[in-house]
Length: 615
Image (cartoon, rainbow, N blue to C red; front, side):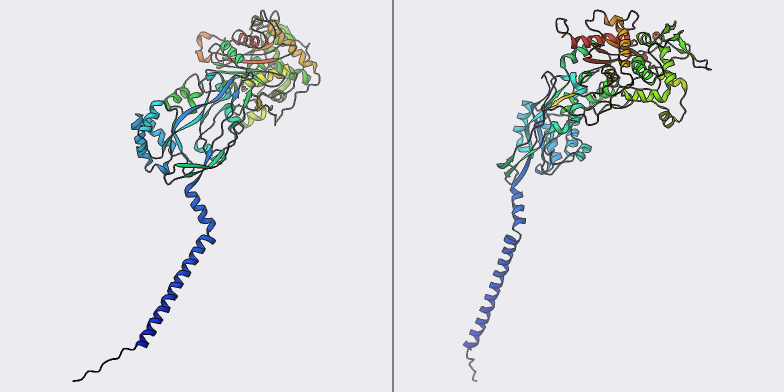
């Protein structure tokens, strides 16, 4: 059987190879074209995007917080400075399970569960990604050593050196300068995010808060190259921060200390002004507190003790303490009577020891139950005669009385740079109708004329009203800051001066206030004994609890904290006033006996040299 032999077709095989080769070439060329196109797209078209993405993986912008401005008293004594401190911070993005890391920190440093809770609360505060959060402040050398030894167990945790606020004068300026504290969630929403990058504290009260923008400065930054673990390898670019501005206060530390000594540890307030400029020379509210407690976070226990204390050390009595002014407003009421023409300085009123409205049986008592007989304006001021001012208030009426008292700053904020200030309350017919939904009664006008009733004032308002009498109606709003980086602060909302039809009325009231201190029957003449200058003053006693009609004030039957408040206002020298002072002693009972000597001591400290001579 024969088999046919197949002859191989070399031409056909060659064609097949050529086709496959051509297809392979086209395939390779196509793939190369696609690769080139992709490379072109990534490296040319999307160059900016990927370049930025690459840089952000290795280049980070770190904020450099500015150094906060310093604060001095008027003589150059340091009131607030910045001191170095070591804090422990954590970056949660680099710590992994940061709650577990917190447990390690508490264990290593042997801290309490309360500390652990506080750390977690701080970590949960709003912040930017990769921003370190300080969780523990004021580390000592032993704590720093323990952190260093255990660093391998604490990823994302580092010890950072920083400047923190320090108040070297302690309690002396707590209520005027205020204090700083950690930025909370509410404040974080209102702050400029960029300028507060890297800043964890902000002014919470007083000057620290009011002048926060000036004290804070402008944040700087630096671009740094980091490795994959976030460690800084080198600084690529740096923009230095602009430090905050230094502030010089109008306060004088020696006068401040003298006022505190004069108050003698009693609950109360002292404020001294320069009537010529409005500068606050002393501002004391007792009891006080140590502002350093708040800087790095006050403990719950320490804050509770301050908050719940019956003596209320956190209350700024100068700005927020509300008290009936008592007879301290009688000089302002006298100005109202003279300027409105309802009285003259020579008009006399007979005082049998009380005053009665026509067709009413109620007796409005004078403090001197036996009466002072016939009294004119000067005698009425010297004796603080209530009967005279009952009649004067009745002649004025509530409408005119309210208008004039508001001109003296009662019922309104008077300061330039004290945001905590309360406006107090100067009642009016409209106020009572709106608030209490009742008509105004004539008897309420009478007691308003001697500073009782609905009226509520702050010691600062009383000091300013007194400065207006001293300054013959020229308004210089009280302020705590003398200069900011050498520049005087401007009053952006000036208050109009009190212009009288007869300017000599100021002198009439001034003379009457001098008789309070130097007259033979002046109510505070004992406080002026031996004075080398003339003092114009006015006492006041503010009731804490009402006394029934016909009853006498019996201190033995009144609880200690229900005793009357003692007030006194004054200025000196009477013919060229350089200082105006208001003093309030809670439950001090007698303005002339208790508060007037405090005013005298403050005036002596300001007007006399160390050897007792006039400056």
